[in-house]
Length: 311
Image 1 (cartoon, helix red, strand yellow):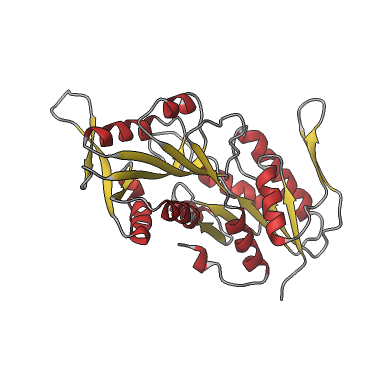
Image 2 (cartoon, rainbow, N blue to C red):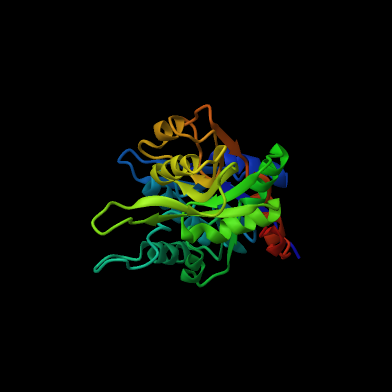
């Protein structure tokens, strides 16, 4: 039996939260999320949430640590308000690239963040395209990691691109590329680094048939865009007719926008897990995942399966 559904938004991505609430046809809970004069985060829930099934929507994007603190205080406030269940909806999960010890004396930051989120009060987590799937195992509560690929797939399918090939920018993203290529009925390519000779700088190459193809590079994150721009340049040198880039999380930090604007890439397809205000440019296409997240929230609320949402 479904519990009374409540949606709360932090300040990280209010436009996405509003779209999700509209999909679910419920109002956002009246919530105060602001700052004290010394910069400390101030949170207050201004509605009764006793016995409610509450979903807190907060992307952990820049300013990352401020948005994490907002989420933690919202969770703590709800935990102390006799809610039935608290789900942290985290479209973009920060620190996910720090998921293991790759050097001596370094933290596993993603594990620490998972622990803190649960301690603050989350009974469940809903996220999108975790950078590393094993992060789900860092939590002791249920984690639903849904994929943005269905949204990206529908957009690409509608473009009716001929001679298409889906390209992974590295070996770690092969499964993502394979899933999309299978749905589109086309081949895949894999970009890899090679060293032509000892003491010679690494260069990029590709496995797969690229010549004469329209290539779509698919990844989970575009951060500074160095990797994806270099991959696009290499694909064009190998005879690709055109190159499009697609990703779930548009961090677009530092020189990313200028790099993409001046690159061989004809279009950059992203989703709104992270707001792109102030970073728009002509090549950028932003797809909404509000309906996908809204459907996942609805199914969790009524205790229905969300597995069919996993492409």
